Amino acid sequence: MRTRRAATVVGTALLAVACTGAGTPTPDVSSAAAATSTAATSGGNTGSLTVYAAASLTAALNDIKAAYQTANPGLTLSMAYGSSSALETQIEQGAPADVLASADTTNPQKLVDKGLAAGAITTFAGNLLTVIVPPANPAGVQTPADLAKANLKVIAAGDAVPITRYANQLVANLAKQPGYPPAFAAQYSANIVSKEDDVAAVTAKIALGEGDAAIVYVTDAKTAADKVATVAVPAAANVPASYAAVVTKASANPTGAAAFVGWLAGPDGQAILARYGFLPPG
Image 1: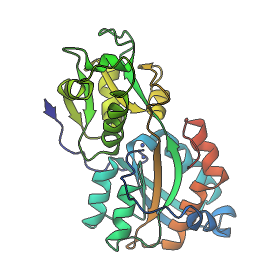
Image 2: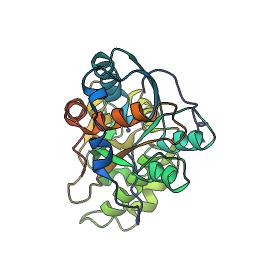
Image 3: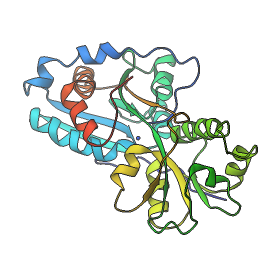
Image 4: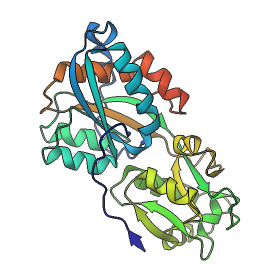
């Protein structure tokens, strides 16, 4: 098994979506939505903002960046994408982010719990999981049960990456479905041949034919629809993912950061997210 080293944050737009741990405090959905201030809707938001965002949000947030800067011509918006867990760690270590937009609620809540956030977290999107395979599907994966087939090469992400936590829950749910082998979860784990930095890297490896199958977000499969094929997951076993954002305490532009998070959770941001297959926050 080969593990890639965690990628450093890349400049310019990149985030998607993974894991709400048991006991996570209920997100404050209203706080940032209320912060969709006059500045964010009338072009009065100025200065600069740096948003650290989950890799699964890359395509959607690239469009959001363009739309938000058009609405706020005095604002410079920078995006940096990667694994939500890696980005949270970088913020803890002093990285200059104004906002963390995560593929889960767990990582933003960590910043709140450690006194590194300017307020409560705001959920702004939802997602579901699916299985992807290379277009030719050389391993003949027909259902998620085939993830336990002998010698299948499964691509996954690192253990701390949200998609991994969601995927592990999905596998546990599938193991309880009729027709799945008793050792399904163990066989799936044994088939993992690579753990990547984030879900975008997982999707890329499948698109290149460097693995037989992977569990990713529905939005990743949609964005890469011309490069991968999809194997549907039973609705009864699927795992909803909640995406949340938080303004960092160290933000040099906290008012602008709160306005951006509010816009993201508001009608304009939601319309763009929906185009990429994201669900409304639940």
